[in-house]
View 1 (spheres, rainbow, N blue to C red):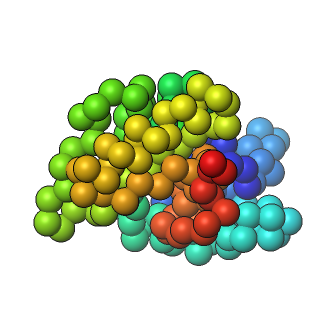
View 2 (view 1 turned 180 degrees about the horizontal axis):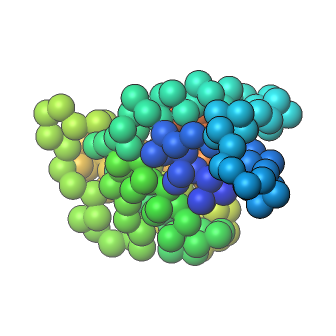
Length: 173
């Protein structure tokens, strides 16, 4: 169980996640083994991430790739690991993604029924921090609640397959 781009995008599909022994058995056996005999169990990672994998897979199946439907997620241009990493995770979970470069009008006006929060994933460089006030102002002018956060928010959300918020996700100002 890992919080990588590929793992989180696969999880969004609600797929059955097998341990690597399945491949080893396929290579050494003349028949294809029963996949359900090789369901991934990783108690140490479950504890580290605070997620029971079987529950996350069940939620992913129920979410049908719509966990972040209606959620706008932006990232700074210079975010560590690159925006494409986070774009694929957001879009695999049905969210809207864009890179925020400080330009006005990047956030659409909130309409009745829209999700109120907009998220800016950021690193802690000076260049990224300089974008925060403009993002906050633009979000509020459009009727949204800005949440400028570290990438852990997205990674934890995608891993658990449920949107949770903790203030520890906020980027320090």
